[in-house]
Length: 135
Picture 1 (cartoon, rainbow, N blue to C red):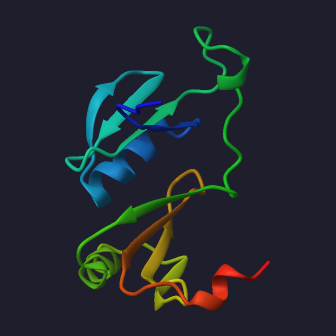
Picture 2: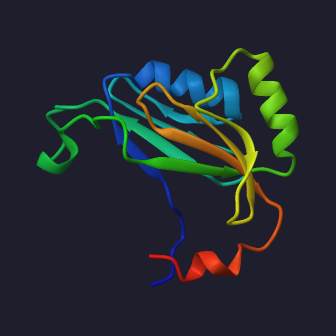
């Protein structure tokens, strides 16, 4: 299989709040901004979409609103420290404050309006080899 595009979609009642969050804090731009469906794209090529639950055009698997916890979105950046400072200055609450992990990333995490953990990271070293054998 040759992928030509990847987009994450979230079924949510919070269409406008979700759009505004990703546009304001992460520079995504709307490519489709409808009453029941919003599709955003970033200059990097990343895409995310939001769909109103229970919309009559959608099949059963696209009807139920996402419950929140249990999913995360990684956004890898060039300067994680600068992004952390910028988002703190903007008043965005930190779910996980800036830290270094044994698996090689320096990161912090915020929650979007749907409860999705948005993990902003930079890989700064190779993962600790001992992690590969842990169960």
